[in-house]
Length: 138
Image 1 (cartoon, rainbow, N blue to C red):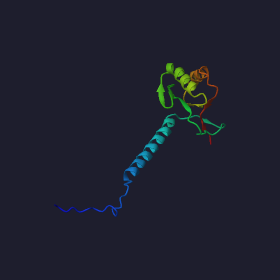
Image 2: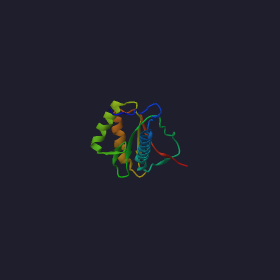
Image 3: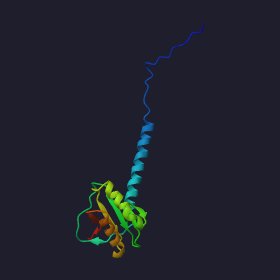
Image 4: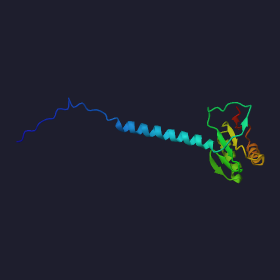
């Protein structure tokens, strides 16, 4: 018979490899940085009018942002939407979360004729409080 040697496991010092966990954490950090930048870009496409009065915008809750471009195009949370579908979308969003604030960000050069139908549709949808977003004039 052949002699077999027994390998001792006592001194092997098995360790957990944390390299894959560090890689996953780094990917998540990069992902959240990119998503945060996209959220900032969502607001940056509209040049806001300036105002001397008002209160500072709070980030306590995630608001519904309605954008009106200089050409009169409407967007909800950065997604362009046809004017005919706007009322239905807002009614649905408001019905799901009636406490969510709605902020209207109209371009500085947008005519009031483009903003008025948006405000009217918000009122028809039962929205009681609408915030108009401007930049503070220095």
